[in-house]
Every structure is written in C-alpha cells, then in structure tokens.
Image 1 (spheres, rainbow, N blue to C red):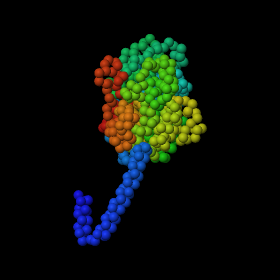
Image 2 (image 1 turned 120 degrees about the horizontal axis):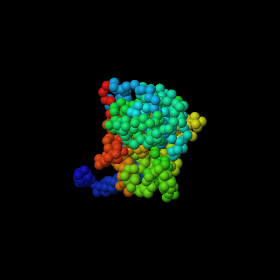
Image 3 (image 1 turned 120 degrees about the vertical axis):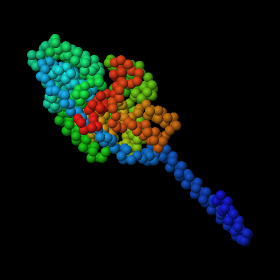
Image 4 (image 1 turned 90 degrees about the vertical axis):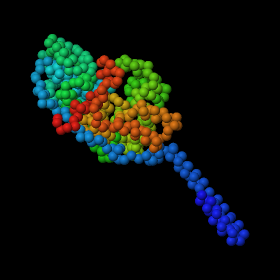
Length: 498
C-alpha cells in the first residue's frame, strides 16, 4: 500500500515537469532503488554469516537463553524444614552389654559409611556392643586404609556413647572364642534383629561379613531411624588430616565464587559394570566387556549397551554433561569441581566437557601436589575429600545414581535442602538422539525443554519414595528410595518439635 501511494505522488509531480527533468529524476530514482537493493543484499549476506556462526558456536547460542541467578544458584532454603536427629523422650540409655558384634564393612567409601551407620542401629536393636568396624581392603580400589585413617575414631566412640557401647577391639578373653558368623538378610526390620539376637545365647560374639543394606528403608522405629542419621551425619566425622585439607579445598573454590560439584561417574569400573559403551571406540568397548566377564561378583555379563542407554541406565558422557549444564543456563565461566576418580579415556573425553566449561578443576589443580600425596594413594581417603567438597558446593550434580550421589544428596537435604540437580538421564538421551538426527539444536528450544524436564529435580523437600508399582515380596524393598538418599520425614522436620 505504501509503495502504491508513493507511485501516485510521483505521477502527480510529472504532470507539471519538463520531459528531460522527468527522465533525470526517474533515472535517479532507479539508481537509488538499485543502491538500496545492494545495501540490503550485503546486510542480508552478513546477517546469514552471523546466523551460521551462531549455529556453529554453542556458546553464542547459549547467550540467547538466559536464566536468573536465583534459578541457577538459589536453593529452596529448606522451606522451613530443619534437621531433627535428636532422640525422643522415650529413648533410654544403653546398657553395658557383655556381647559383641564384629563387622567387616564392604564396598567403597560411601557404601561403607552407610553400612556402618546401619550396623550401629543393628547393635542398638540387638542390645550388643559394637567393635569398631574393619574396612574393605579387597574391593576394586584395593585401599589399605583402616577405620582411623578415614574417620575420627575417638570422636565416633564418644559421640555414640548415649546410643550404644563402642570398643576398639574385643576383650582379650574373647579374641579366640568361637564366633557365630552371620550374613544378615538385606532390608530387614527390627523384628528380624530381635529374633537374631537369640544367637547370643550360645555365642558372645557375632561376626557380620558384610554391612551394606542390612536395614530396611522404612517401617523402623523413629529412634532407630534418627540414630542412623546421628551416626552418618555426626559420629562418622572424617579424620583430622582429611577434614583440614577438605576445608582448604572448599575455601579455594569459594574464593573463585560459586561452584558446581560434578560427580562424573565416567570411570572404567562403572562403564564396565553397566555395559555402557556409547561414544567409545570398539577397542575400548571390548576392554570393558572383558573386565565385566572377568569380575566374578558382577552377575550381568551380556549387556546390550544401546538398550541400557535408552533406558536411562548409563552415566552421562562428559560431552552430554556439558550440553546439559549449558542448557540449564549455566554460563561458560562457571567453575566446576570434578568429583570423580580417573575418567575413562582421560582428556580425550574430558576435553568435550572442558570445551563447554573451561573452568573445570580437580583437587590437584587447587593445592600443591605434596599436600595431596598421602591421600591420593588411598581411594577412600581421596573420595572423602570429594565428599566434603560436594556437600559444601553451591550446586551438586551427579551424572549417575550411585552410593556417593545418594549419600551426598541425603546429606545436603539434611543440611537444609541445598540445591542438588539430578539429571533425567532417560529424558535427556531422547533429546540427545534428536540432536544427532538434526531435529533439534543447542539453543533456546533445547534449553526450554531441559529446564522444564528438571523443574522438580533440584532437591526440594519431599517425602521418601516407596516401592515401585508392581513390585512384590522382598524384591519390592530393593525398589524403595534409600533412607540415606532422603531421610525425610524421620530426620527432617517442619515444626520446631524435635
């Protein structure tokens, strides 16, 4: 319409203008149109180049999607919930029982920690004295650390004196006495242990070869549940050298600003155990397969890696973690602490994550090597440092749900529901596959989908999940959410009544 009006105005002028002037003005008008078309073409070309550059550069794309600082870093602040691990008024002092439980704690650091907490509660249920547990020295990590190498033994004994009697070792007269060796049934309740206590009629000592998952997650007396929390979050304090260097590492990270603790479970044992080989070379996949076949206590041997990944049963790859965190809105400048063992494939795969977040740091990059030397020779002590840093982080992100991920999340919930983002691996894999097909690109659309997917996966207060629908018998107990992953409602209260 505007163009037609302009033509009419030009026509009106030509009715009173000489012919040569009309020709000159028409020529000038045409020349102006050609110049404008040329400028528009050049501008369009430059614009298309900029758009292409954005399509090639994921960090340019991410600038189009911004999330507020509060959404990125703000926690729920507990919503009024607070720790409540004190015993109830009905709780009685322990007796000096002349019967003992010896324990061999199995697994890695956090499996041992939760197992020890279970055994403290079991000793209370069985009215027995607990001998300081022996730690696993035969697991994948081959760690020779003793209890007092990792934990403050004197503090452990003193802190629990109002709950159970703990001794460093058996009395001399019982060292060579016969012991009832008993594998306690997994996920057992208080009635089971009251019955098992009858073994003490014939033996003064019961030896427990494994400590993991000895207690049910639910339906236990309130005071037993709170005892588990007091043990895990208070009595099992790390040894002084670990606490000291752990606090120093946290201070170093905090001096840089806010930071994410990323538990990147992209380690050889985990990839082999889960059968996840996506993104690996054929040679690497075969190496993991051989390792799985040669590890006797891993029951699953033939695993379909594609099915595992589609089902959400695989740890996210370093590159996938980078895409995920960027899609959530975290800027390229974000500091990320890598809480993990040796990453499978090393820098060949870790560089994919570093291309998204260059400020990716490890313990070795924060303090002098000599300060870490004695810890790095022991996997459980090194894991303890990762645990401290993860609990104190502004945001905790586990790439896979394992013992450490569950323990850290539970501890952060206990301390006030600090922000913990749990990736929806199954949902993310669907998005990553669409990206590979070219049906979706990194940018606002992906960010919107990822943020919506994780709106309710950030550690806000909620009651512990029960068993999965359709599960039956004792098998249903295994499907319940771990007590140590979310100790609400027993150890986290909304009112001031402790």
